[in-house]
Length: 180
Image (cartoon, rainbow, N blue to C red; front, side):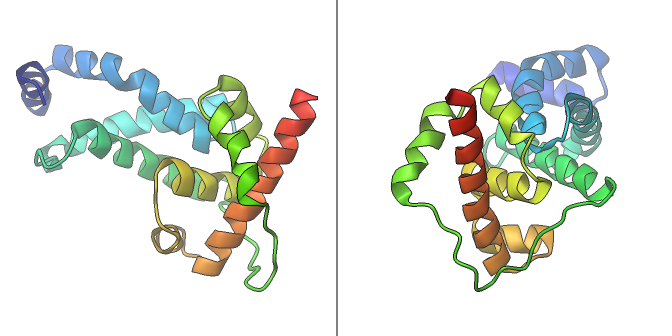
């Protein structure tokens, strides 16, 4: 962390509004992209972003400087986005499919690598069922293990794995329809 970043963080911890605005302006784009990936709509993503930054500023004293600040902030934002999904009507719903084979080949993963950062992909992901989208984000983009996903979402490891495979297949199908 640079001296300037450290200075801004210290000023934020002291409640200085100008420093908080600087921090917000610096990270809002990246964190909004994170929120969009989990949200059902742009409005939901905006709500998660706002709530996430409130939590970041409130809990800033918990950041001990171990690891990157951006990584810490991202984790806070993801947790807020997940909490908001749980609060929504119907919450996070998963099908228990322990013994169902629903797998696409590893060769099909290239479709995700090529389009991973596009705004069009985020819009397509928002068309996915919430459970698919959530597991896909946590596993692929946040690099959670299936055990971590299971613990975080209160599902089994098998459900996490099946939701990931079904999410990839679902997203691949959406991409093929939109690219055709």
